[in-house]
Image (cartoon, rainbow over all chains, first blue to last red; front, side, top):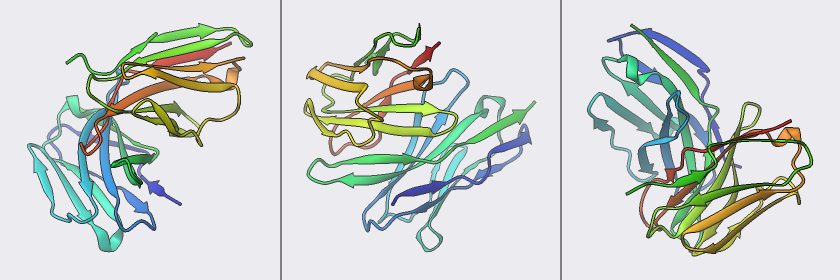
Length: 118
Length: 113
């Protein structure tokens, strides 16, 4: 069974601090995908990143970076120099391939509510 | 691109009534997903279509729920009869096979009283 654990329910940091959101997953698939989504107070789900299980390189996009460690089944997300606009709920998700269709079925974690204090 | 369009944004209905949620995927996307978000269960996949055909409906909670995709540009999720425990935010998402990430709609907040 697929499972995603985001142990941090809520995090608050002061603006400009760095913050790391943890994500641990469980799967028996050899090929899988990992995602992060942002859900701001307005409620929509904003795609941040997709990473396949064969690519363990860390990724950086502006103030965002992701650390994928297959050995510990973790896919952590770091925001550097946080800003108030980063306040949102962040979801980690595990994508299980759906055979013959080249797509994935997502299992979401419970989310981490991040509050950036001005 | 207008993105994935869902309607209505908010729906309040009385228990026992039929509710229909609508979704227009991004043009050219051939996969469509319906998700439900609740405080208790988080985000869960209800049903998945590929090329307008339902592929996996194992997440549909019970027979009161049904989904259709009559063409590539339109899908509906129907609940009949609705119950208070169906209150949730329902998201539609679309993607193009072999492309990455889904694009989610803004969701429909359903309240059944």
